[in-house]
Length: 309
Image (cartoon, rainbow, N blue to C red; front, top):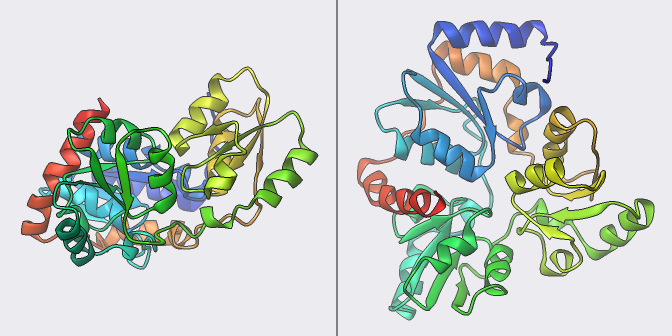
């Protein structure tokens, strides 16, 4: 059992959360002080599923990036979804817009559209089904179509393509996560020389040459489970730095080393304790997806969740 020593501001937030009948959802890439006050901490898939289970709460404070809060709103249109900092956007999600999907559909009329949950609601509205890094292959294999338009992350698309006989067509050209693009083969060689007994686990948003050198390619939730259940004692982790913060807190008996010390998502770190408190007190900044877009997106989100069960 993890015993937390909370600071005064964290205690004020917890008290305010009870007063407001609120719940705080946070992504694994949030800093330690926010992880500690979250009611639920998870990866994109876990947060999507949790969003469908929110009952008896009037306010949802979402400590993540824009597409995550949009998804929570799509799944809970009757609830107030707020983010502590409205500038917390996912650059990858903004690389693919609805118009580009429609153009790709014209070019490949028989293809199904699978979008990574890391996409904006306007793009989700044009998808047949969504996926996360944890279930992308399972989602693709669940479809009858042999051609799949897959976006916006090209590395995840290529990761799936290596494991299926279906034709995976990445959209847009060059879609990526800037944090996971930081990792290179030289980083792997350096860390493996320094920690020769450590297993290397990387995220499927990493470049293929990095994935090819890894012992395991897993989502952040998969990484946590692998570290927890593995017989190995040491791991090199190739994803955003604060996943290791969570692992170190929850599985202190294992040793985890970052593949790169500056693998930091700057927009995830825009949320601070002061902003979380302000978000609770003033119930802002609210995320509301347009009704028509939300209705069109809901089917794709629900299909993903159903496949994931």
